[in-house]
View 1: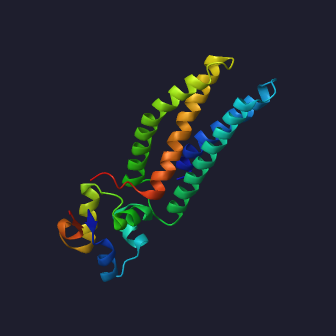
View 2: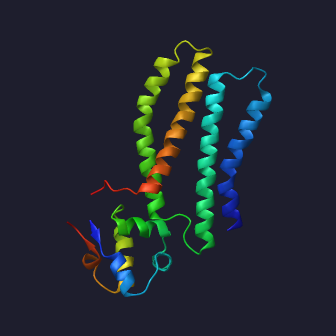
Length: 134
Length: 63
């Protein structure tokens, strides 16, 4: 159980550590892109913490932390995120074409955007169920 | 797909948490099954029908 808790906490702590490192290392003043990246990272961290608390509550009441429904939700969220991210990449490339350094910003926002879409889908499906599978 | 889980739980005086523990899932899974917002795997459907001691088709009704 303790090993499992440590393993699930590791990705969240990793993201937080990377954020702190990135903010500490940068010498540039924050612009709108930097603030939006920080905002998206905070959203990802908050949703991760929310799901971890939920799974610990399940464990505490003697239930499974992860069952077939939660696995199905993750699969469905991933497939929806992939589908939606195709449109997001198009928008990112079209609207951020003038911002420098272009490649870094496009790739950074694109990857974090995919993460945000995945986590939002995960949250939505775990709250509303998966009714469209008949 | 309709389910009779809620009705059968009431018959057997089982809470959602108790049923979830007996079939090895989270409470949310039972909630969504009762609301018809999730179609269970064959194994879960079998486990649930075993708890209520009736056939799968008597718990889960295809419309």
